[in-house]
Length: 233
Image (cartoon, rainbow, N blue to C red; front, side):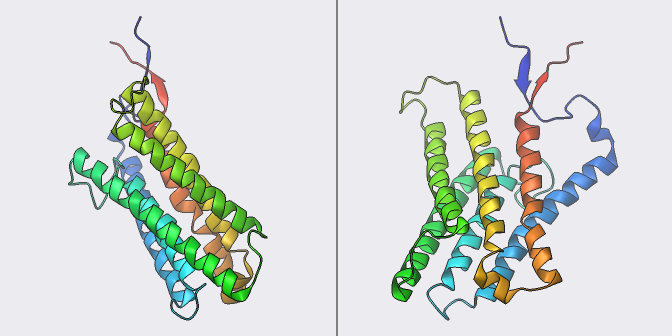
C-alpha cells in the first residue's frame, strides 16, 4: 500500500505562495543570509590580518570554509531568489559538490595552520571548548561528504535505501553539520584572540551574525523535507 506521506516544500497546495508579503520576506531572508555569510567571512579575514602569523590564516580558512562555502553550497538549492536561480538542478548539484570540496580543503588548511602555530609556540592542543568543537565539526564534515558520495553512487556501492530516503538522510545530516559548525563559529567569539580584537557592542553583533544564516538554512531544509499528508481532491 503506498504511503500517505511525501516530502515536499511546506506550503505547497496550501495557498502560501499567493501571499506576496510571505514570498518577499522569504526572498529577503535568503538574500540576507548570502550577504551575512559573505560579510562575516570578509570581516573576519580583515580582523585576522592574514600573513602576520601562522595563526592569522586559521580564522580566514575556517570562515571561508563554513561561513561562505558551506552556506552557499546549501543556499543554492533554495526555492527563493538566489544568485544561482537561473541554473538547472544538475548544475546546482555540481556546484554543491564544488562548494563542499572547497569546505574540506579550506577547513583542512585552517587546521594545518592551527597545528603549525601551536607547535611553533609550543602550546598544548585541544585545551578549549572551541578546539574540541572544531575537531568534531571537521570530523562530521568528512562523514557528511562520505554520505554525499553514497548519494552520488548508490548502485556502485550497492545501497539498499531508495534515492528519496538517501536524500532525506543527506539533508538531515547536512543540517546537523551546519548547526554544529555554527556553534563552533559562535564559540570562536569567546576566544582570547577574538575578544581582544572585537569589544563592546560590536562583539554582541558578531555573536548574533552566524545565527541568522543558520535559521535560514534550517528553514530551507525542514521545508523541503518535512513530511505532510497528501491532499486528495
